[in-house]
Length: 150
Image (cartoon, rainbow, N blue to C red; front, side, top):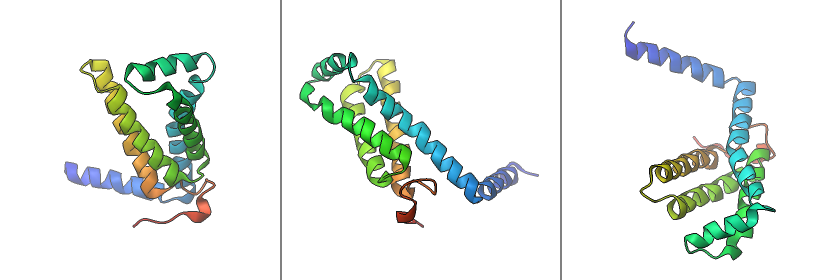
């Protein structure tokens, strides 16, 4: 059996597995949980003692610290919406824009760690755009309003 046929068989098995409704729903829920965790925790970390530090970091790139409540609201609100599967396409699209903009503003330096952080933001934006395209899946508050993209 050649390599191409092996990969074709493996991909076929994956297609068969994810076509099982409970598997598909569980994977979508898991994906939302994993993706939302970074936004919820980032928003939460900016509350209380982290607020002043986050404002200072924003000021260091020339952004007004008064925008911080909007950032926290987007991170926590968008993260929770994504987790629950509520207005998933809208939340995912807004968070994807946020990831790209914040990546450019905060992580566009030549430092290797900043480059990694920038690429992380782009990767998260890519995953969020998949939620924008495909929606939240069956185990979500959006389940009844899903628009199927073919």
